[in-house]
Amino acid sequence: MESQEVGKNSVVQKLKDWDAKAVAEVIEFRGETTVVVPQSHLVRTAEYLAAEPTLHFTFLSDITTVDRFPIEPRFELNYELLSLERQQRLRLRVRVPGSEASAPSVTSVWPTANWHERENFDLFGIRFQGHPDLTRILLPDEWEGHPLRKDYPVEGFR
Amino acid sequence: MNTRTTTIETPAGPAEPMVLNMGPQHPSTHGVLRVILELDGEIVLKAKPVIGYLHTGIEKSCESKTYSQCITLTDRIDYLAPLSNNLGFCLAAERLIGIEVPKRAQYIRVLLTELTRITSHLVWLGTHAIDLGAMSVFLYTFREREEIMKIYEHVSGQRMMTSYFRIGGLALEPPPDWLDRVRRVVESLPGHIDEYEDLLTQNRIWMARTKGVGYLSPEDAIAMGVSGPLLRASGVAYDIRKVFPYSSYDEFDFKVQTQTAGDCYARYQVRIAEIRESIKIIRQAMEKIPSEGPFRAEVPGIIPPSREEMKTSIEGLIYHFKIFTEGFAAPPGEVYQAIESPRGELGVFMASDGSAKPYRVKFRTPSFVNLQSLPKLCEGRLIADVVACIGTTDIVLGEVDR
Image (cartoon, rainbow over all chains, first blue to last red; front, side, top):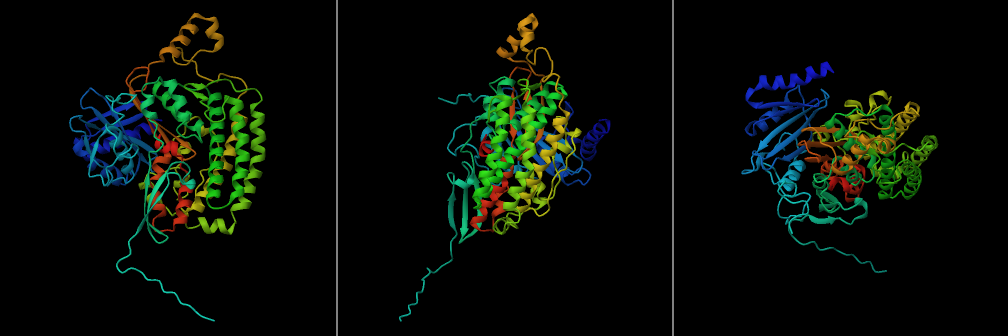
């Protein structure tokens, strides 16, 4: 267990050594590490984590949004990364304000982000800048609103 | 005798690709998958999966239910592997709250999820074979699947929508003779798998339809986030049961099955080998499961007390009433728990704000992500190969659309 802890913190330490501005906050909960990254640094940090040979976070498991409405910045984007070589997970988090719900796309780093970002656009209305085909994926194209937002009623608009 | 010659006039100008809509009611798409194909004759130039026909908003529904109430919804995500979904959700909730599940319940969970892997792979094998024209395999695999479904019914009362795993353990004590039934199935299964292999493994038509079809390189597989048998058939030995063991999988002896060819035939080999490995795990679990012991954790106020306690102690009655009317509060925070479902990495992201209902639940379903690789598998190949490629990705549309 201890060696795992050391391994985990070394990733955060590596990130800080690389660019201290890329790490806004580090959250530890139930043995999971979350690194909060400023939006402007997201793609750079992603590229570094995927390409750095000692880290090798080449596998993106998931992108999830949490809507903290009415708290601002309203949206939290969670990127679940996995390093197959290090057998380790890491979560990147980007905070997105409700007034301008957009974030840079990471499809250039992890091609699998394509559908994940489309899903987050579809259900939360977050616009991913630089996405090759940002269209709805689960709902019909003519659907109004983004159902997983907290101000969208469970039974839908009547 | 007159000889007639026919000349076919072709319109001048460049040939345009034809757009063909496959689905959402096409039988080989196993549900409501729609693929828009751009064709040059028989060759697929572009394939674009269109999904969402089965979207039921399960993640939104979860936000208005207590943690325990969500479990019944998880059955309906991947309806071919309900117990795996139950397990993923329960493990995430247990991690969030910080509950240790008794060993006996953990082993029973392992045994039942491995049975689930077998049923899921059997359905896959049967339907995949029927897609490619081998009718009889389907009849055999469903015969064996039915025996395992009977075990589910015996243990949980339901064949499909089991909801048998609960937060902290199991829903109820399994009936006394259930392991005998498991033993009977496990004894007969290896012989049946040999039968399927007799029908397919050296079958020339089967090999012609699957060998070299739908190639996926390991680099592409990782870049596309592909997991499960699909990834392992491309030579990447990533199995969450080994890498991030949960539910005491680290105490079991089994091998991660891989192939390097990365084609449909390799995926077939991986899945067949996985059924055999699952049988090994089930055999070990049968040895390990103690006949006596608690089947769920004891955490007052979070895990429902036993029937006996509820009827005899005042605290038990109060806790029972509170848990089933208002649920329990989980500490605020976020967890991501992944398990190896029959299809790959099933991740459950759970965020809590400290109330009795999950603030956000996200199911990272393997079918959704694996389906994204479909264009990579079938572009540049024949239409007939599209059917083989869809079959081999082993998608469940309920899981893709959620």
